[in-house]
Length: 484
Ligand code: NAI
Image (cartoon, rainbow, N blue to C red; front, side, top):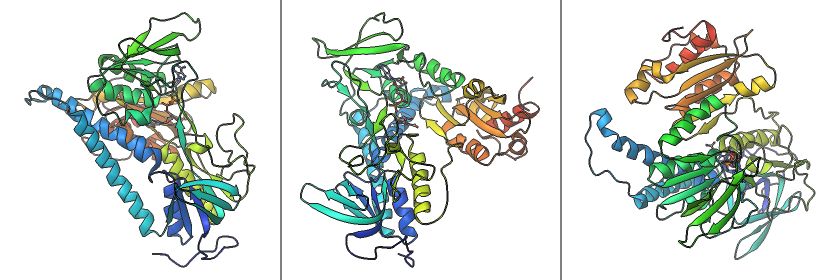
């Protein structure tokens, strides 16, 4: 499969145990970089202590989306009468739903392994530790091996954080990984943290019949999203029976007499206690932190970010040691799979002598709540804080034919443009297909397209992307299918 081998600055040559590039961590950052490098003829070794695919494939994006799909099917069946269909005795078989989720994951893991294999990446199972800037110790239960590499990419990812409060490590307190391994649906669940993980799980479990309470420290859920978008999800969460407490700080978790966990919390500012809530399970979703344990990063002198979290990197993903790069969650930047993959390509390009820099201005966010939310580029609220004047074109899905046929007409698209040039610098979508639709807006933001260019692009009818087309018109002279 290898093309002619490239020479990576002082190539070590095809000696066993010696590689051009060693990558520690096989998530969407590490494995994509490995395939990309190997395709160009570099001798690449990928060290992975677990299953290739990392958090995203094994314990994050993919399994949660498989469950989101189960919930969608269930909900559609429950609402069958709305569509003129009849269905009776509709139930969820949680065991089967989890088994399907596991099959989806297993299929993708097989795919990743096969891609690594066919592209000639050497995969070393085991835990990697930096011995010096060119040597890695790989440890398995049975053996320790030393390998050498001219360049190293660190892609060890992140791990869930636990609040430093009493009861945080209790038996009923789980993190997102354990939530994906539940064998039975709990009757009730308290979710600490109304961020992305908290709200995605809140909808999954609530729709499956679990009594869900979300406790969020800040004054709103999904705080990094414009409020007009997150309010749609907030309202929908209420309708789904999810209880949400905001401006609420969890202080302790105790075990009640009935075996349930009792969560005590207080007003985040005044400290006034709220009535406690109890749940069969407590899901801790208060953020993730870079995974550096046992990596030997500081021992070999790698600089960390000022907050101590994450390996410090520059715009080409190079660390403070010249031949070592770091990508993905371990850098403590944007913890998103697609960002990790892109950072991996940038790191690999630079190792292979091509000068690409990481550009974060067009990074899409996709949140799989119900309705979905997706954003890219500058936020409207962020523009206000920065004192930047923007023009916003909005279009509601209620005016989109396809959304009405789907019976999903809640939500809207908004495009944020520069008033003088009409260039689209950001966008947000809440509603049907938002996480897929954001692709078009991302292309526009990344390539600095104007609202006029999008408005003058023929969009197929009847489709959801027409809502983007209409929002572009709204940012220009007015949406066509909306009264002024
Ligand atoms: P997050 O930072 O999105 O949310 C954590 C939430 O917990 C915040 O809203 C925070 O205010 C709250 N919190 C912190 N301390 C608290 C306390 N004592 N009491 C109550 N609430 C408290 O982190 P999350 O949801 O754990 O996700 C971790 C990372 O994974 C994020 O970077 C996220 O972007 C990424 N991710 C992305 C997904 C996507 O793009 N679809 C899906 C899942 C995760």
